[in-house]
Amino acid sequence: MSTVWNDNTPIYRQLRDRVVAMILDGVLKQGDALPSVRQVAADFQINPITVSKAYQELVDENLVEKKRGLGMYVSEGAHAALLKSERERFLKEEWPTLFARLERMGIDLGTLFKHAPGTTGESR
Image (cartoon, rainbow, N blue to C red; front, side, top):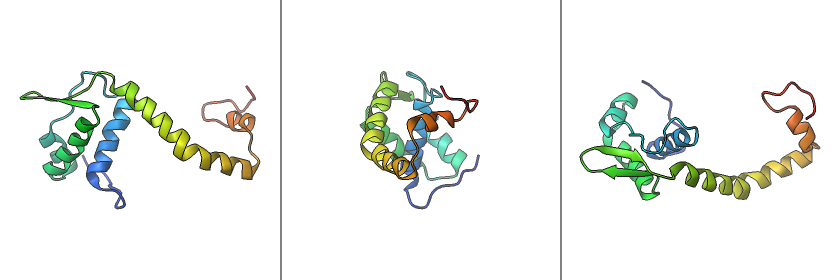
């Protein structure tokens, strides 16, 4: 398995973000085991210390729990906690800039919804 890493962000952080996305997307659910550090390191051809650092961040954020001798598992409530924090971050950091851009271009919510992916192009 090969992947392209972004040079602007540390690999451990990108790996952490991938696990977060998998939890948010429902690929990893509460109680699911994460792949072992060695397996991820081998799959992505990265240093096991890099994987351990990413996993430790997830543990520090209470999204993943270590079970000694068994591995790492998605914590109870991880999805809900991530959803809450991601919504708050979006509304605080991304939405104001996005909203200002939409206003500059004269795009209202009706137009936005009309052109949303998966719609037939008709107003709702």
